[in-house]
Amino acid sequence: MDKSIDFFKDKNILVVGLGRTGISVIEKMHGLSRSLAGADSNPSLQLKDNFEKYKKAERKNIKIFLGSDINQNKKLLNDIDLIIISPGVPNEISLIKYAEKAEIPIWSELELSWKLMTDAEKRNTIAVTGTNGKTTVVTLIGEILKNYGIGAKVCGNIGNPLIDTIRFNGRSKAVTSGNGNRSEIRVIEVSSFQLERVYDFKPFIAVILNITSDHIDRHKDMESYIDLKFRLALKQSPEDYTVINADDENINKKLADNNYYKKIKSNLIKYSLNFSEDADIYSKGSDIFYRAGKKSGKIDIKDTLLEGKYNISNIMACIAAAKLYNIDDECIRATLKNFKPLEHRLEYLGTINQIRCYNDSKSTNPDATIKALSNFNREVTLIMGGLDKEMDFSSLIPVLNQKVNSLLLVGEASTKIHNMLKNVDRGYRIYRCKTLDEAVEVGFKVTRPGHVLLLSPSCASMDMFKNYKERGERFRHLVMRNKF
Image (spheres, rainbow, N blue to C red):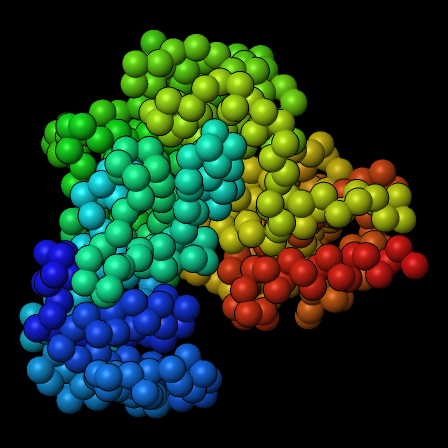
């Protein structure tokens, strides 16, 4: 038996949270541990089909516990040796507090997956974190690798758990492809929630895009949030690489702490929108100049469809990772030329009734909305609001004054934002709307011909929608019906 799997054979494992990640953990670990249990406080979860195939399995070692009071059930921890916690499960629930008091190890799915991977697989990893831009960056890196003929698996927080990419031969030996050098690379999107419970996870290339206020309702304060993002790099070795945004205030502040800086053992690659002697990658005109590993040169990006300075930063991060895997410049340039912006990320929906409409539903924090607004003049009708994650919205005040003609507020956070702006000297009107439908209706009435209607909420969606995708799709539908 492979040593990575052998570790689990005598373990009783409890999976807390049975969403996409939890189900994937149970499916992968079935038969590899002494026993396996899953628990979720949502009693209405439709799990029957997920576990039907295990009823006839030789080892009937899966138990599922559902119920609104499950998080208070301390008995679930009897004889449990290891807990795998799904990223959406809060750390404050009683079951997790009981487990911590009993000193039962608690891992994220990311940590579990890392333990299951071979050394060759671990070497072929690029992990990307940051407040904004993660999905665009991992998707673009994946496209560059594939276009160069390298197998790439884009996974993690993007919706495809890392554990789903791991294969076993006969349930006993981990399988890797080819010689393990360039055969298959995992490009992993990593959230702060996943980083709360990692201990040995250390990708070959760690990318930290930016760190701005987000998820403070969960992480309590900004310093804790920054520390979590840097956890991506803290276990790395001198042969590994950390790619960082040298323009980011919070990243620079952390690295300026000499005691903290000494903890980072990897090779630092810094990218910046401006030339400096300290920057390994920087932009000048339509060119990106790079120095990464043993490679140096420049790539013309004038044909890219990714607009805005923040996307130039994202492109530089992608170039750094690609050059560390020796991808040639022409492949990178061609991929950038053909890469289309992702849905719900400043997605241009068209000009409707002489109004340019953009869907930026993925912007779930103030910094993302600031970046979106930077692409426009003083011409925007902005729809903003949603679930309040206890974030500081004050950074938006000067940008709203520069870019917005009308502000339409929706959702739970609308009162907080409205109260913040009540006594601010501003040159735009505020409309409070009960629904997104109403906001779009008002938006088309108040936006001048040739100007912009933009959904960029600065907030999560779960007060009114299942997720940002559902919110964005609803916005698209509402906008498109105005064509007729």
